[in-house]
Image (cartoon, rainbow, N blue to C red; front, side, top):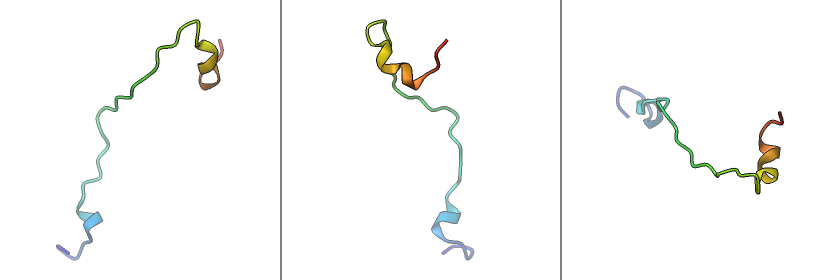
Length: 41
């Protein structure tokens, strides 16, 4: 379109500085539910 480039070439490819995700609170009562997602110590 502009300068012989497509629309995807005109968009800036940028990595975000930070990424915030919501997380669940792990307690002794629900720890077994989340154990497969983490590491055992």
